[in-house]
Image (cartoon, rainbow, N blue to C red):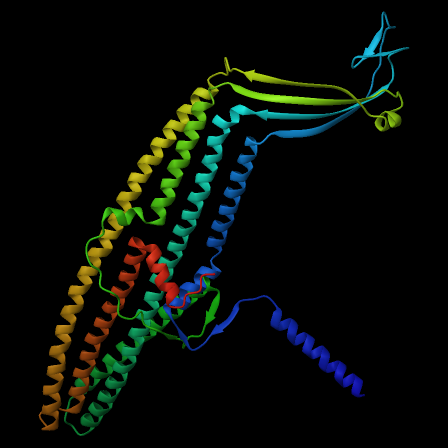
Length: 456
């Protein structure tokens, strides 16, 4: 009986372990959510980055494969064949320099070692190897560019989440104040101090605020779902989204050297260098092929196939130099060179277009930051005036000049101003991070790593 009990417990423990190890999504994240956690989770979970890493390995393998043409090729070859003669011999028969008698109608075998080294590969295939090497370097920068896209997407998404959290927090405070104001106005209406219209107007404001909060909550949940697709972590609806904090000041307009430091620009530069190497290879492909070769032969004289394989003896060897000069190939090499030249020009134009595009993006973000700074300054001045108005209204309410319901409604308007200012501050923090990613990607990622982002 005791043994059965322990057996049952063992089965339950095993099942629990299997369920715990079963593949699936990460458990729901409770507590708080920070920007660094979101970026780190997205970088670890992104399938696009994994694809880019595989492309790097593929290009590296192609580069290593192209280097093999710079080494000699050595092979061992064997042949087993049946030699038949349709007519009788008219003289002395020889096979591989050896005199044989009788009808030349026997099995024979041969084994030889052959080596070949193409010298011309040093001024032909060497540039092709450099082409694949530049493509490998370009794929590394392209992977960094894809990483930058992921971080930018998560930055926009997290900014929307933080903005939604701000709106929900202030809407909750505004609804509480308006509900208290409605209850006070309802009491005043029962006493006959205000009209029914004033009470309905206050109730309508509460309904509008609740409708606005429901819409903000819906958008917040949708953004959480989108973030789950990026990070692979399911978040609870009541997760606390931490703010982006005070963004650093941005000094000066971005210069052209900032654009040249972006991973997209570096990847495009490496692609252009790869095409230049390919153009050199196409130009040198018009030169002749030059190489050396050597062959070391073995031959078995026994007519029996099995014995001829056993009784190997040295027979002959040869070595030489070969050269192949192309005379006519239908224009193959000519148009290959022309295509490489056109491709280089296309890459140069694409690089120029990319420089202009990145310059426009950085300049647009810089202008947006300046406009947000002015807007935030105006909201701060407006909020200071509202605080003074609230202080005056509080004094009037204490003296009986204003009702508490009116004071609560004025407080709701001040909260709306404060909410809008916090929203613009959050938008500025998002814009600063995007600006840093566009102009100083390496520094921005180092800053994220220093704040706890695990990208490994």
